[in-house]
Length: 454
Ligand code: ADP
Ligand code: MG
Image (cartoon, rainbow, N blue to C red; front, side):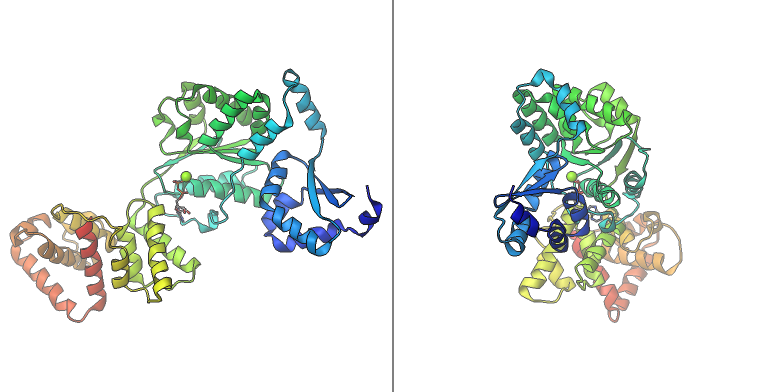
């Protein structure tokens, strides 16, 4: 140990440099657990409590650390991180007696492979809540903020691109925010399995077990991929039992409910049912509109309302594709330096909205128009006389006349057995309004475009 160097090195100064380069969560979560040991030659020796932290720091903050020492402590050329030998660690070593051939590099491999970075954008703040996801959102919020694991395991299920991964990362961020010392592990089911399989071949099964069981929170994403892999399943079951019985939180996600999982052991399904299972259902027009508005606001982009409406109508599959469409419009605006208008958005999204040659049905028209004006589908046939409902009916009849070959009496029948003169009156009424009402014109263009392609 070189004391001369030691004297001029200040760990506090080092920390304050890093602190100014990182966000607080990362700093508190990953840097604060480190401690200074010594300067050995020209190497800074740091200690940290776990292999997991060590790998994380080496993967994510190596550049930053090297940069800081280069600028502030030029006599230091490199750094290494050692893992502290805590009493807990020694006990752990006792239990792996049978595996005396176990070498650290196997363990290191496992730890390393298990790291998946959390997406900084996937937070509760960035999650738009609506009818399809509000139950899931509230359950996740509870899990992230409650000290006791009340809903355990929490099982989030729903189709692709609906926000499962986003919610899982949000839980992790929230827990880390509240208590940076909490050990959270987030893996996909595929990763979980491949870790298990490689642990089997490396004979490091015990360290595999410890790796998971030493966590406060374990999250496994896309759990459906674990189906049918018997060895992994039984390992998973033991991990699940041990974590749950110690009051540690488990969060799982899958594209279907526990009951619908194929080829998963009965005992696992029944264990999962002992927790809380929450569903994220297909998006609604309203939620899509909210998500686009939030994204535009986040990016400080001035998106005309009719463009938001158009995108929310156009992309109904899932949020991932919705974001894709939004990004495409924004990118076009930025690259081509043109303002975002309805025409522009229709042009840009032309190919991504699938073209459909099926004849257009009046039912589709009614559905899209009802969605657009936020009225019940049933009101297309009702006699409700408020302004919004009757105007929406007029629009739907007008579009039906334009886009289908149905006769006026046929249209009338589909709108609550109305007379053909009523349909004619509605069509005329819209034609008249269109001459001076720009908003109505936009509505009808959006709806026509969407209906033609749905
Ligand atoms: P899943 O894991 O269910 O397939 P993701 O969590 O990856 O879906 O979500 C897909 C994309 O949609 C992500 O970029 C995510 O941020 C976004 N997203 C999903 N739901 C919402 C929501 N309610 N609010 C904001 N963004 C969302
Ligand atoms: Mg996902």
